[in-house]
Amino acid sequence: MSKTSRPILGALMTAAVFAYSVNAQSTTDQAKDDAIKAHTAAATAAAKEDFKGSLNMCAPPVAAQRGARGGGGQRNTQPPSDAVPAAKAFDNLYFVGLRSVAAWAVTTSEGIILIDALNNSNDAKNTIVPGLKSLGLDPNQIKYVVITHSHGDHYGGAQYLVDNFHPRVVMSDADWKGVEGPLQFNNPNWSAPPKRDITINDGYKLTLGDTTITLYVTPGHTPGTISPVIPVRDNGQPHTAFLWGGTGFNFERTAANFKRYADSAERMSEMVGNSGIDVFLSNHPNVDSAVTKLDALKARRPGQPNPFVVGPSTVQRFLTVVGECAKAQMATF
View 1 (cartoon, rainbow, N blue to C red):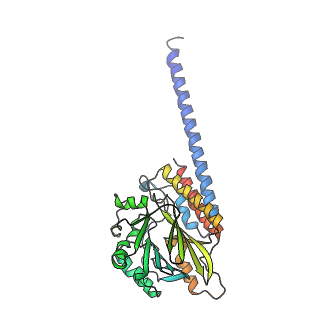
View 2: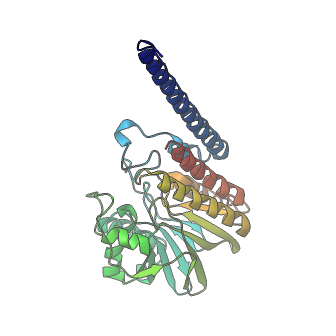
View 3: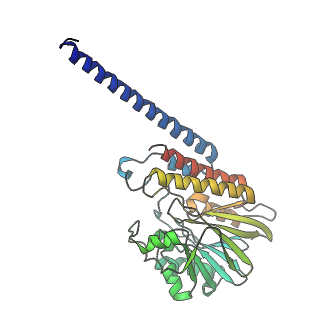
């Protein structure tokens, strides 16, 4: 080989390697794009009209959101008028929350199980307590406060309730650790977290009087998010409610975290199908249209269905939406 041909050969080999690398990268990018589109299409088909608002979870994060937080999902942004009148959803289930974030009271033969405690002591004092009283319920009968996850808009009012009414506070071990360590978000609207009390594991049965609620640990939104299953009654007729404990993707943006979320959604969807759960609830009213449904209940006539009773397939559709959006986000890695 001549001296002059060697540089030419080297250049050709470099060009070939570069072309192969570009082609491989292009193939990988195309596969990612195809996967994102497929998962987004599956989520869109499942969303229909009632869960269309959750499809923003499929959207990739904008530049300002890249890094610590994932793309999509609700934020606890308070609307100009956050107040919502406390209202009865079922014979034994009452809404005592805000327009931006929910608290649910489950009544039993021996007291009240409260699901979540809003943002802060003022919310507990000025929303939960008077809300219960307006419904003829006694806040002194709050025996348990179940915190669905370790974000302050759900635990913020818990310590006020403990100090004044002495309920036990329930959270998963992973999320107790979350509030005991450096907090994920620092929001001045949130009061300090409660002190560790009852720690539950997956499938924990919380019984109070004649009622047992089952607490599933569904990692994703936080490492130890709790999703309760609650037996409810509508004019004496039994139904089963499922509350998805954490919706948004406002966690560290990693493939592992999105997979954890998707796995939890798939697992709960299978559980819903096997158990006949027919009521979907959220701890953010924009997700389950709770305020609209509560308004509809006020105008409900005898014999008309309860708008919260949507059937197992609708509950599964929601879980498909959030699960497929998590997979769409995971495909970006």
